Length: 215
Image 1 (cartoon, rainbow, N blue to C red):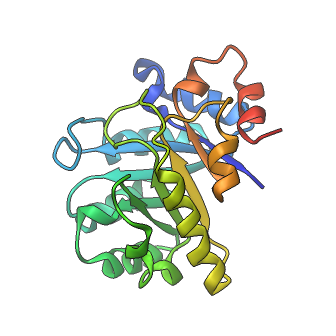
Image 2 (image 1 turned 135 degrees about the vertical axis):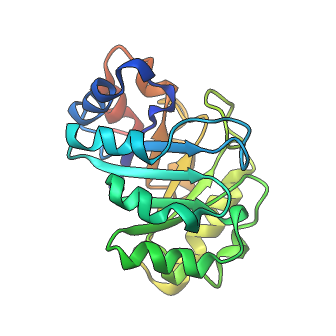
Image 3 (image 1 turned 60 degrees about the horizontal axis):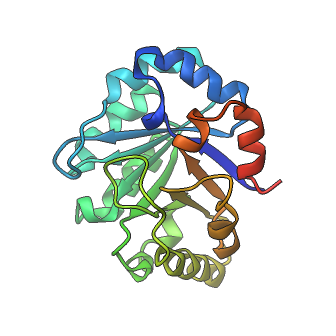
């Protein structure tokens, strides 16, 4: 089953609670929450307090994507804020297993994200510990960018690693994905689609979610 995780990065920040409800009411599976620190990526978005404030407004899965340096410092904060999935970047630290284990110790799902120029092969010693891999199909930091075609090789390679160990691990893709091209990463092996502009610029979000699933 293809899952859809609309990103609030493209939403109206002055009405975030309403925007999260819009995601839930559309039939989407997750809400994608991009946390940026202005150091790991050049943009700054929001942190755990905003996510905590949103949590009472929806029961939808909170898919929290940390684009921050040394993420282990803040894992508990995002767990306490209501995260259901925490994704951190491979490039953001060196203590990957420690971060994964800490996330799992709180009873939630752990994922690693790869930038477009990072090889899927770095996942080999870690893949068995993960619940999901997020392949960035644009350079992280800003919404509205064009899908980078070479990341399809990363998706295929990641899918191959997962197949080798026979595990049930999701492959999420984020960046430059719209109704028209969602079938491309799905064909390569992705099963969780992050969409920002495609969702929030849509006049019919429920239909957009349906089409992003390839239906």
